Structure formats: C-alpha cells, structure tokens
Image 1 (cartoon, rainbow, N blue to C red):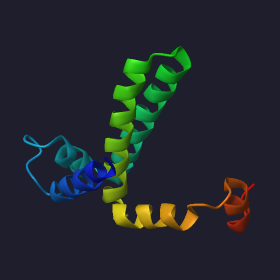
Image 2: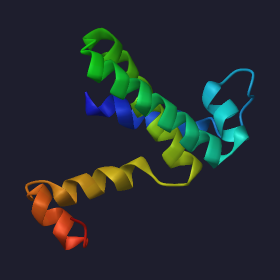
Image 3: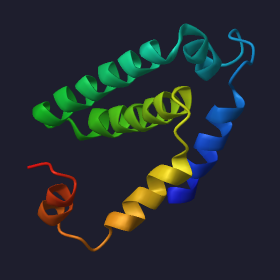
Image 4: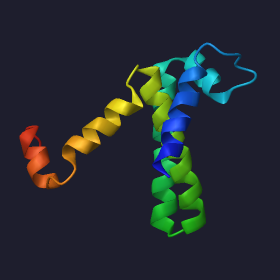
Length: 106
C-alpha cells in the first residue's frame, strides 16, 4: 500500500512545469512553494476538524488530501520522498522520546 505514495510522489514530481489547465499539481507548483505549503496547512486543518468531529469518512478523505498536498509541498522545496522514507526508516524501532532528544527537541 505504501507503494501508492511512492508512485504518487513520482507523478507529482513529473507535473512540474506541466500545463496548469491539465494538472492541479502543476497549478500549485506555478503558484510557488509558499502556496504549496499554505494548501498543505489548509488540508491539515480540515483533517483536524474531521477528526475532532469524529467524522471517519471525511477524515479518511481529508487524510488523503493531506498526504497529496504534503507530497506537493515536499516536491516544491525539492525534498525527495525517498529521503523522507529513509528518515522514517532511520527512526524505526527508536522511542519517539529518545529520537526527539537526539535532535535536541523535547
């Protein structure tokens, strides 16, 4: 199932510089990385609201939107999905508390 995110990341990356009338991702890229980040934030807030309301169907839909917009935002800032996956693998099996302390966060 995680492969769908890798495929989606590749598709999104391929939309850079494409026709904005044919691709929503291309339209976001054309607006700049700040707009991509803003859209991600909007979708995250919508997911939070759905979760707070206990609306499982809407939360599922909003979570998909969040993941899509996260991939767009990452691509807009030239952060590769494979690098995010590598970071998650690095953290795998490490307590979240320990991992945060290793980065100087509490």
